Every structure is written in structure tokens, then in C-alpha cells.
Image 1 (tube, one colour):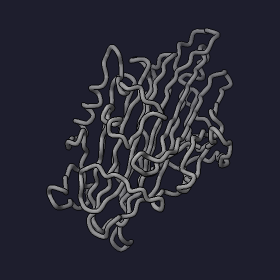
Image 2 (spheres, one colour):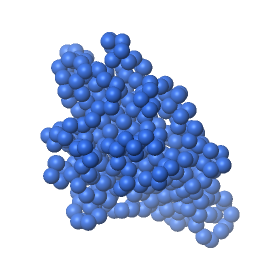
Image 3 (cartoon, rainbow, N blue to C red):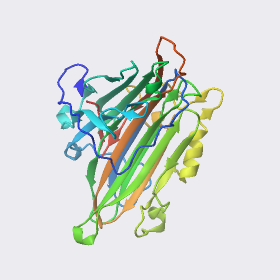
Image 4 (cartoon, helix red, strand yellow):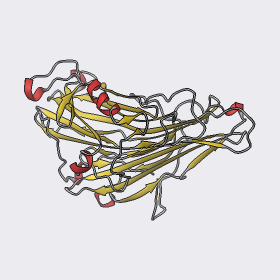
Length: 372
């Protein structure tokens, strides 16, 4: 990514990225109007603590616990069903995670944006951006933003549909803070908007969780869907999780072979169906989605401020673990998709279909992602 102030960035790669354990939701296949737009913004905070606790787990301001590795900016575009660069997701830019001293600034992908153009003149465009900051109460955060733009030129049947998809990936591992009982917490907020109730696009966030055993003799790493949230412009939405609903803080025990934990909405334990119902209640057939009543953007939403998260759709996950799990690896995706499928009449001017996703993500012992 490229800082918006200082243009120092890491080299690009064009390699195809292997499929992650948790795949993103598939966008609708057809039927998009020729001119639509949507914006999605999300934030997620991960943390760990001793014991089994449902309460929000605030990070300690520990610079030594910042995640390492990098954020990858990826695209998956196509014209008329033919993928650009081959099937699957491709990395075009990335940003190495800095130490505490460098945890600041705004970083654009390189290039920003990247554009694919078909022989017929249709375009699929991708943007990503990361903003790093230190929280009001301490901690290191990364706000994420992705934008996808599909512009299918009218009359070019071969490009129908034109699809642009953009995402940021950020896998990293958190060690157990205790040799016995411990908890992993995630607090997620979604605030965005679609310009049209007829738009054919989607925004989604997926959080995969791998539990790593104490040793190879005690078992193999186990993968779970910690949380997946998908919002479609037409008013539908889904919330899924592998959490089994066991509140170990109350029951005092874990169920073997399952992902023990609960979802919390406004501090109350809910099922995925109840969480999904609360989300779809923010849709009105006349005015569309009302996910962002206060008009937050990537610079004004602060996930460590509870007055901010309380005003939007916010969902928490709590995972209860014991000494048999030595660490947990989180694989996160924040993504957007745009689909343009205009009429095939020979009209000279292009017809854009837009869908934006601005994702804000905070991970690990207070770490957020940024864009390269």
C-alpha cells in the first residue's frame, strides 16, 4: 500500500492467492441494474483474556503483542464469465505490518485504483485503503476500506455481466494468555449504505478461526466459521457461526469437539437467526438500508468508543477455551462486490454499476489492518 502522504510502499505481486479456509459469500449471478452504488463499512476487534468471560474484553496497550505479517489486497474480476488473470483471488498489493512506532498513517493500495479493461471497453476497478491509529484508551487499530466498481458498456454482449470484487485478508495468530482457561473475544460493527433497493451487489465480512492444539500428539488444528455476515442490496442478509451457544461462564464446562461460545447483541446472548433478524430490521423497502444513521466514515468511526458502536449494528462473539488450545489463528476477510449487467441495446455511453465496501478492522492484541 502507499501512504497518502509519503509514497513508500511494498512491491506488488500478481500471484494467484490460494483459497482460504473460509470463502467469501458469492454475489448474485445476474439481474443488476446498469447504475447502482453501495457503501459498506465494518470494524472488528479481537482480544484475549484469562478465564471465561462474556463482558467486552478491552485490550491492554502492549506493543509487544502486535500481530506480524502483512495485509493483502486482492481482486477477482470478470467479463462475461471470463475471469481476469485466471480463476480465484489475486493479490495486487500488500502492506507489511509495522511495529508500534510506525503504527500511524493512511495507506492506499498500489496502484490506487487498479483497473481491468475488456476489449469491448467495459471496466472492473478495485480500491483498498488502510488507516492506522492508536485508540483513545490505548491499543493499536487499523481501519479498512475496499471499493469495487463494475462498468459494463451497453451493447457489448460479451462483457455481460461485468463483475468486480475486492477484499483485504489478514491472518494472524494470538497466543493463549493462560495455561488453563481463557477467552477470545471479537466485537464487530457494520455501518454502510446502498443507494438503491434494486442494486445487485453485496458486502460481507468473514472471520475464520483455527484452534491450535498444545502439541501434535494432542490433535490437529481445527478450523471453524467464527462469524460470517453478508448484506445484499435487495434487503436480504445472513449471519452464520459455528459457535454452539454454550455459555461456559455460566455452565462451567466445555463441549468436546465443538466451538464453545456465544453471540452477543447489545450484551444479550442471541442465536444467528436472531442476530440476522436484528440486521434485516435495519432495512426498509422504501428507503433501503439504514445502517449508518450518524454518517460515519473511515476517519470518524472509533470502535473503542462504545457510543459509536451502540448506534450501528454491532455483534460480539465470545469463544471459551482451555489449556488444550495453545493459540488461535484468525483469518479475516472484508470484501465488496459489484455487478453490472445492462441491456444489450446499442447505446454509446457506458453504464456504471458501483458497490463500495469500506471495512474497518481491528485485530489481535489491539491491531487493525491497513491497506497498502
